[in-house]
Length: 471
Image (cartoon, rainbow, N blue to C red):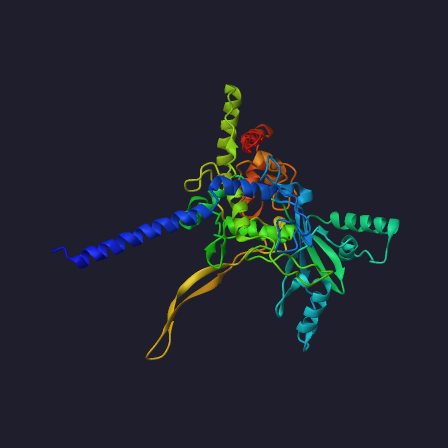
């Protein structure tokens, strides 16, 4: 090929474009804080006790008005920053129980009237022209009389004051507490409610979980029924994408979980997730509390949290017992769902799938229904057409399904199960039902020494070592 002036000019133009791109990239990178600085900022935001009209929220109203705590670390602290939470840190969920009256359902305008009634009780239930089934029933508010307002759901009259209110509240809570973890509340204005809870999970190793591919989880779901008859986990999905986080797989990614939690639990309005409405002052304040950069910093901090550790026992005799416990854990079938390794993530002890855990662990807030691909179709006339995929609902018991929680760090993450109803690992195992019934039955049929060895093995799955001061 003959080299011409035009070739030279084109080469110079191309080289100049490359140089400009390199300069712009360096300038862009200079504007983005380094990873270490981003994680440092994330730790500051994660552990910060947020305030109303917080200076870190110049465009919003800061903490609240509805909240469950004042910081992320307040609920995620067991075993260190980012750990699990105690039962008093549980998120409470309020679910509408519609009046079972089919004659009223058929009356003209009943739907509108029902929506107006529920909206008057709590505007958080309003969702355009429909009714949202479940909302977060926050523990705290900027309103001083919020506790009295909440007491009405337990049947405590709003006009009671002083000692009378304390006695009535105690009696109502004791009465409902005896009915189990899921409480049927008397409700208000003829509408009953159910109260359920979610325990804050440990976040250690979350970055590794976020790195697990969809193909890996789908492969586990395909192989599981063949390897373990009677156990068939379902891939949790949101809008047909793998959802990796949440007790029922309700968060697509670590970033989505962080933003949703900041908005729902702290009342910090975040990109893509609005803070909760105040039932006593329904108008949402303008402005956003957290920027995308702040949310990304918190996400970076959570992603950087170290993985839990499996303690290596040095005493020879004790090591034999631990290894025997691990073998028994496999023998009774716990590994069907609590698989030690998932893809490249070692020691996770989960399959990240949804499983039917039986009626004993049923909850009024269902998992997202599954979808199955039916086929692709083309619709259109002689000159154009549109191709589309069709999906059908998969018949599953969504009210009894729970995502398998990773067992790494389990020794330092009590209480156990989705609402913290089990104080010990032993109690949590015995409450397993549904697909886990056979494994739980085998565990119960063991000798006390065999059960103790399984628990001894699980006691070696610990939270990460505490960070040294200054880190």
